[in-house]
Length: 383
Image 1: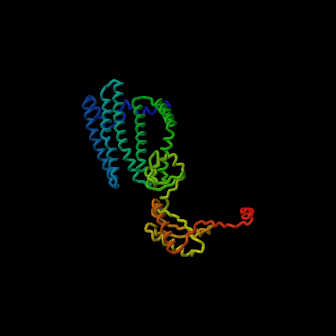
Image 2 (image 1 turned 90 degrees about the horizontal axis):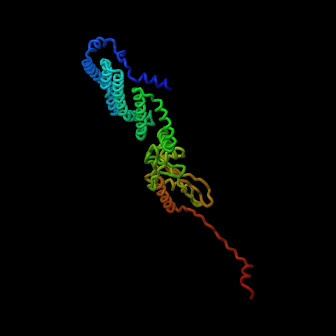
Image 3 (image 1 turned 45 degrees about the horizontal axis):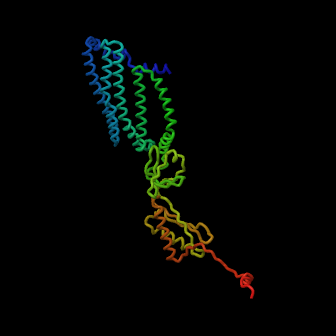
C-alpha cells in the first residue's frame, strides 16, 4: 500500500524540474529571458492567456457545432462550464513554469508549485461539480437508452457524482501536498462500515428505490394493488418511500424496502390502461337466456363510459342452487372509474330486468308444519 501511495504521489505531486517538459523550440526564448525572471513571468502569462483564449475558442466552436444538432439547452451549458477553466489552466501552467526561473529556496519552490497545482485542481473540480447535474439531465433526455436516470432520480445521482468528485479531489489534494492518504482511506473505510450498519434500513429503502425506478413496475399515476390489500393511485415515487392515494382520499406511505418485496398488481399496466370489470347476475330458472344476454349487453352498450372496443359481452357461468348465473364483462377506460361504472351498471340491470319481466331470484325457505294427533290429545287433558 505504501508503494502504491508513493507511486501516485510521484504522479500528482508537481515535479521540481518542470523545464524537462518544455518543447525544444521554446528553449532559445527561455534562455534569453531567464536572466530577467519578472519579464519572463509577464511574457509567459501573456502567451499562456492568449493560447488559452485561442484554445477555448476552438474547442467551444467545435463542441457547439455538435450541440447545435440537439434541441436541448443542457449541452450548451455543458460546453460553457467545461471550457471555463481552460484559460486559468494555461496561465497556471505558465506560472508553474516561471517559478523555475526564480532561484527560490527548495521548500518555498515546492510549496509554490503545490499551491499552483491546488488552484488548478480546484478550478477543474468546480467545473466538474457545475456540470454534474447538467450531464445527468442530458443523459436522462435519452430515456430509451438510460431508463434508470429520470427526473426523480437525478438528485440521487447528482449527489453521488458530486461526492465521488469531492472524494477524488481530496485524494489528489493530499498527494499534491505530499501527504500519505493511506491512513485516511483506512479511517474512511471503518467509518463507512459503521454508518452502513447504523443506517441499514435507510440504505435498504434507498437501493430499493433505485431498483424500483430501474425496473419500473409502476409509474406515477398508475393504480396498483398490494398483496396487503392497499389500492390507490401512485402520487409520489421517492428514493425512500412510495405514496398511494386511496379512493377514500387517504394517503398511504410505504417504504420502498417493503414494496420492493411485495406482490404488486398494476391495474394501469399491460398493453393499455383499460380495465375489464365483471358484474355477476343471477336470474330465475325458466328465464329466456337469450333475452337475458341481450338485455345485459344493451345495458352495457347504453352506458357512455363503457368502451365499445372491445365490445361488452355476457357469459353464462353456472346452474346455481336457485338461479342461472350470468356474468357481464365490460371494458372501461381507466381503473379509477371502476366503482362508479359498476354502480351504474347494477342500477341499469335492475331497471332493465324489471322492464322486461326478468325475475331476479332470492333465497327462500319453505317451512311445512305437520299436525301430530297424539301430542294434541295429550295436551287437551282428561275429559
